[in-house]
Length: 356
Image (cartoon, rainbow, N blue to C red):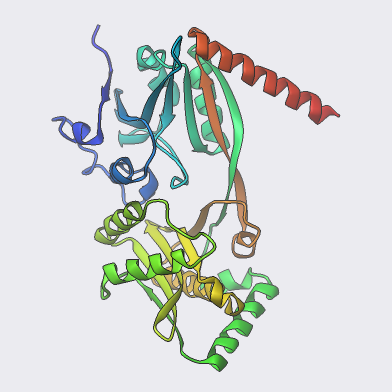
């Protein structure tokens, strides 16, 4: 019997397959975070441990691709084999990439690739919407695994945007007054300026250097992988999807934001400000500039703040959804059985505490 799936040792190896048509079949509204180009940059620069494994599964309607990292931890008397989604703190979402007239079918993917999945003690996937988490759980549970859904993060977003007037009409008076007050404070102090650009008429390398200068002066201190950010921004720049906003004081960058516009959605990916200028709320005013730009110029219908439960996001967004992780354990392997029992015990304790 011919296997309907293949496991590739790298994304480069996947591209070398004669039937690989990932780039040609890319839809313009596909979020950058789910594209093969994202995973290629991620594989090289994001710093996730483990060996890359790309699962490709053939269906009658097209191909499904899932990007993973596998790890084996040796403890002397035994070892544990982990399979993790190719995702970490840089990843606001995770999903299967489909080619052809199909939607992701996790049950078919697991069913067709079951021989491979059974080689692992645990399989961990994140971040997922509740719909994704439930569908993956069903897919693995039907195949004989034990699955545990856990809380991961929150996603704030604003959809059904018609124009800037309606967007600002739905914002709180407190936010709008704060922006007006801080603008006046900057005008009074003098020498403040804002740049919001698609980078077509700007030096992207200079803008990225300004971003890193701000980031290193912020509460975040240092970027985990500057190379990842730079290569991702260059990739989005080449696609015409990068939007960068920088606030300056006397030519010094003091606030910076990186946004990606994919189809009719703008994703707010990175933002930072110099703490020495916090009294001016330059980041808040810069956000207003970027919101106006993507709504008026890019005609986006949705703006997505991606992951994070920060309270300030509620001021800008209209809705939120919880994000989850899924840990799958294989009870047919000794270590997998231990994980299964541990997760079952944790779920039992949680149900007891919720009753009390």
